[in-house]
Image (cartoon, rainbow over all chains, first blue to last red; front, top):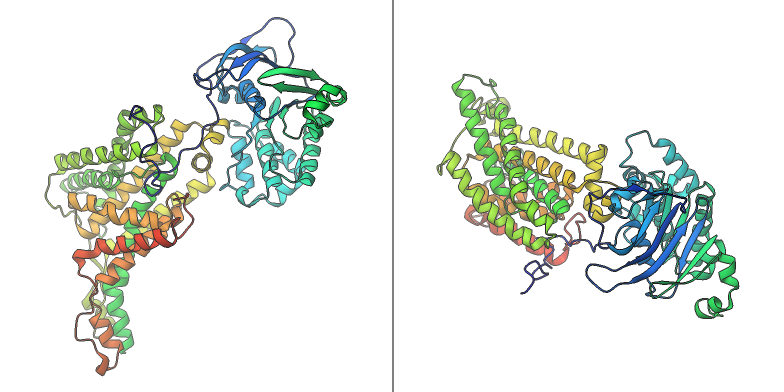
Length: 274
Length: 336
C-alpha cells in the first residue's frame, strides 16, 4: 500500500459512512481580496488556466464575464471544461494563471466560503439540496451566514417559486427533480447574492420542466441579479442568454450575444446540430 | 386474578427492568449514531467515554457525600451528573484536538477513524482504571424503592409483588428529558439544524457557510453529555464496573444499527428493541406461564430460552437478522 490513507477496507457501512465525493480542489481558506484599479466587468474570470490537484490543465487561458442584469451562458461539447470554468470562478479549483475579479476586487485568493460572503451564490449540479431537511430548513441553511432577519428574502423566494411555499414543511428529498432545482436555486438566493452561478440547472429534468426553470431563471435575472450558467441544452440556453461563451477543450472558441451565436453558421454546425 | 398475577410478575421481572435498560441503551446509541451521522465513523470509544464520565461523577458523588450534601430521597449522583458530563466533555474535546482533528485535516477515509477510535478506546479504558480503580463501585444512595414488593402486596392483596426502584424510575425520567432536549435542539435551533445539514450534505453545508469545526465541536459536546448521562444512569441501576461499560458497547452498537445508523429516532427504538429482547429471552418465564396456562399445560422447565450469560448473543442475533433483511435498519438510516 503506497498511500497509507487509501480506500482499503472502507466499504463496510455498518462502521463507516461514505465520504462525499468532493466538489473540486478548493482554494484553501485564509486568502484575502484586494481592490483593483480601473473599470472591470462586474464578475470576470480572466485568462484562467488550471486543473484539479496536480493534474493536467483543463482550462487554457479561458475568460468568462458577466455584467449586472445579464444572463451569461457557458455552452460547449462534453468535456469542454464548462463546469470546470464555473468552478474556477467560484474558487473550487486552484488557478495556475489568471484572476477572478468581483465588483472591483481581486478575489482569486479567496476560498469558496469566503466568496459566498462576498456575494456569490453557487448552485452545484448534483447534491445541491439537503435532502433530509424540509424545504424551509433548506432555505434557512442557505441564509446561515446572515445574522439579520431573512424572512423578507424567504418571502421573495416563495413568491418566485410558489410551489416551494406549498411544500415548505416537506423533506426536500421527496420533491420532484424540477422542484428540487427550485429549492437549490432558492437556497442560493437566500444570501441575497450579488451574482448567481448555476451549474446545469436543467440536468435530468423533462423538457416542460426545463422551460419552466428557464422562465424562473429569467425572472430571477429581472430582479437585477447577474446570472452565470453552464448549460447542456445549448440552443434553449442561448435563446435566453445576453452573452454566450462556447468553450472547446478549455478555451474560448466563440463569444458573443446569445443571438449572434445562434446565428453563427460555425457554431450552429458544430454545436447546435445544424 | 391469575392473569393479574401473571402481569405483575411480568412487569416486575421484564417490563420495568427492560424499560430502564432500554432507556440506558437508547441514550448510548444516540451518541453512537450522532458521531456516525456527523463524523462518519462508528466510535468504538463510546463505551469507555461513558465509563470515564461515570467515574468522574462517582468521585464527585463521594465528595458531595463527604460534604454532607444530598438530595434526600434521590441519589446524590444526580447532583454529581453535571460534573461527570463536564469531565466527559473535557476528555472528548482533548481527544478531538489531539487525535481526531489530525486525521480530519488529512481527509482520511472513515475506516481509519474507526481504528483510531479503537486506540482511543484502549487509552480511555486505562485512564478510567487509573482514575477510579479496577474494582466495582456502588454509589447509589437515597431512597431505594419507589414501590417495594411488600408495600405492593399489602396495597393490592395480590400474591405476587412488584418493585419499582428509584433508579429505574429516575433512568426513564432523565432519559425522556435528555431525548426531548436533544430533539428540540436538533430540530428547532440554528446550530442543531446546521448539524443536520452538515450530516446530510457536507459540501453544501460548507458552501452555505456552516463551519465544520464548530459542528464537530458541538457534536462532541452533545455526545459527551449523552454518554455521561447514560453511564451514570446505568451505574446507578446496576453498579459501576469499568469492564461492563466496554461490554455495553456491543448492545449499544446493535441498538444503533438495528434502529438505522445516523437516525436518532432509530437509536431510541433500537435501544428498546434490544433491551426487551435481551431481558425477555433471558428471563425464566415459568412463573408467568404458570399463572396463564391451565394446570395440564404448565411447563416443567424454567422456560428460560437462554441464560443471562448469553444475553449479548441475543443482541447479535437481532443485529444479524436486521442486517440481512433490512440493512438500513428499522428506521431508514444513512445507507448502511
